Amino acid sequence: MAACLIIQHSPLPVQERYFPVIEEATKQGDNESSAFALLVDRIRMRKDEKQLYGSQIVQNGKGEYEIYPIDDEINVDVRRCNMGLGPLEEYVKQWNIKYVPKKP
Image (cartoon, rainbow, N blue to C red; front, side, top):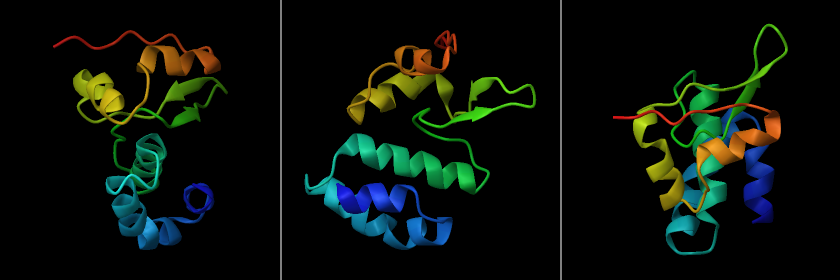
């Protein structure tokens, strides 16, 4: 977990280099899937791609917190649950973000 935490806060090239190692450790049960989900989102955000798990929060031009765009947002809570994360609506309350889950 300590190595994953360091990689989480490393530059993108370091994250990409060690991504397969962290992915395999997660598959083997040697890393928390929730930490892996955060790494996935951080890498995607840094590559200007939509995130999968809704873990990345950014400040807009007004200084307000908002959720970085999410790919296939309708299914975000299913993906979050599969990775051991709670509902997005609950997660974002710590930034005073009111989130209404998308409906199919």
